[in-house]
Image 1: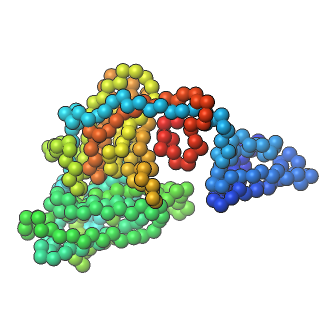
Image 2 (image 1 turned 180 degrees about the vertical axis):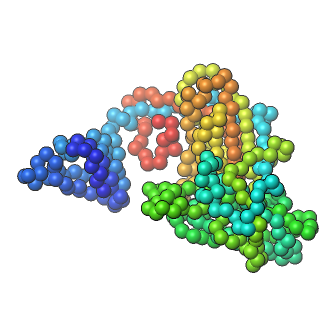
Image 3 (image 1 turned 180 degrees about the horizontal axis):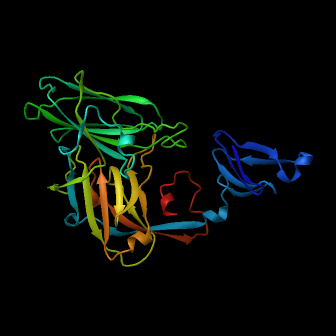
Length: 361
């Protein structure tokens, strides 16, 4: 694909992954002579060119040797292993004060004017649990979603689908409730996590209708539709439910917070190898998502280091790091590193796609 922005600035993208491709187009300065510009593009690369001179301004497929003649030195400056500096809380469940609707509210519409659209909490009461054999809960939703199921605030099961695709899909939970106390009715809670929208399409796509997320249509428990739902956008910690920092029991949605101190300026990053999946905040600023997930046969996570912007770090004398982790995690195994680059007589920074240190550049 070629995108022309002016006679001196254009971008070329190659989606072909097998070999170099040749791009041929008319030079805008010599259209009357049909003078063609011919350029070669590496597989899966992007280039910025000057169409008038038929020259590269930038080519991601061909990195100069001099640009790699550096070595990186990463130094741990803080080990966050002091558990007394961390606070850990459970997720707040029970939306008894939230208005009811017959059906759950679809997540994109529920969170339309809310900055916390990544998460939603759905709750209803049910009497249709089996104690002697398996229960089956079916949720109609979309791809790129994750759900966690609780009954009477007790973790039951979790599922996620992250195929980088779109389309309707049913999530089915099959579970036993032998450890629950028998009651006349039970609080059923579902945490819905939006794992994102398909690349290059976004929230709206080519239509005028928002793409749907969360619970769509009916939810069935043991073949019966569940009604009378309470739906809310976002999730909150329950500050009355403090937990031991090392409590990694399944399904413990955790909110961690700690105070950090930095004495010198520099390029700092959080080594998040001990976390699961969730969100990071520093001094109230959103650092974004994290997920220690691996890809294909690789053993390393897709991202381990998260850059800590200096203007956020040094905006106050004390830095407050807040972590929401949907999969438990252990904050006492986290490190803060300082990363520096030094000249090297031999190339030490390889031209690597998805480099684990890319966020430190």
